[in-house]
Each structure stands twice: as C-alpha cells, then as structure tokens.
Image (cartoon, rainbow, N blue to C red; front, side, top):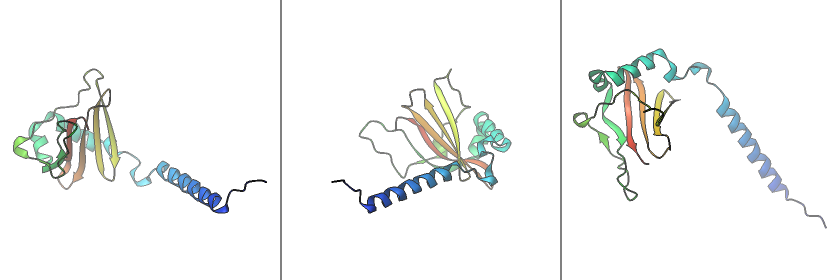
Amino acid sequence: MRYRIPDIFIFSFICLLSLHVLSCKNKEKIDPDNEVALYDTKEFNDFYERFGKDSVYQMQHIVFPLEGIRPLKDSLDVPDPNFKWQENSWVIHGAFDDLNGQFNREFISMKGIVVERISDKTGAFSMERRFARLSSGWNLIYYREMGKY
C-alpha cells in the first residue's frame, strides 16, 4: 500500500512557499524615489560631521526631552519605557572613533530616519542613535546609551 500526502498539505506548502518567494522579492526592490541612502547624502554627512565636533550645534539639533534607553544595570534590570534624556544632563557626544578597530559602526535608512548603530568588536555592547530631517534640519530624535542589551 502506498501512502498519499493529503491535498491540503500540498496546497498549504505551495501557498507558504509562494508567500516566502514573494516576500524575498519585495525586500530586494530598490525604491526608485530613494536610490541614495539618506546617510550617503552630502546634507546628512555635513550635519553628522558638525554634530560630532560642535557642542553648541549639537545641542541645537537634539529634540529634548529625547526618547531613549539607559543601559541595564544587571540581568534583573528592566528598561524604563518612559525614559527621556534631559537637556540639563546631556553629555556631549564626540566624533566617532573606532579605537583602532575595537568598535564597528553601521548606518541604516528607514522611512526618512537614519539609524546609527555602534557596537564593540564582540557585539556584546552597543548603542543606537536615530536622526530625522525635521523643519529645522537634521536632528537627533532617539539615543540608546552604550550598554549590554
């Protein structure tokens, strides 16, 4: 006697495979209106360079109170979802330094936002900043402080 796979399983498999193929194709499409990543534009690069060198400019280009996350103190600590960085306690950020290859940096463009992620070589510690172009120009809109998350 030969075992036959029920038609519903074959149909389900074909549907799932089709959905997977279609979703992969959607990820590979390049938006023709946004062929150049925001972080590759002269405007963003000029802003980013000045943001890391000019403390007055930096303070003028942060949306306070700034959304973000402080690093967790230990494994029992839970991030405060309502935490906001305040202007009066802000520590000025300097220009990126990879410390002779100890840190990696990557930029990602997502729906008008540039996400910057910096992590140590092991990937155990990381930080994230998000920048958006507002009416006043580019601004820091989110900061997750360096820590183990």
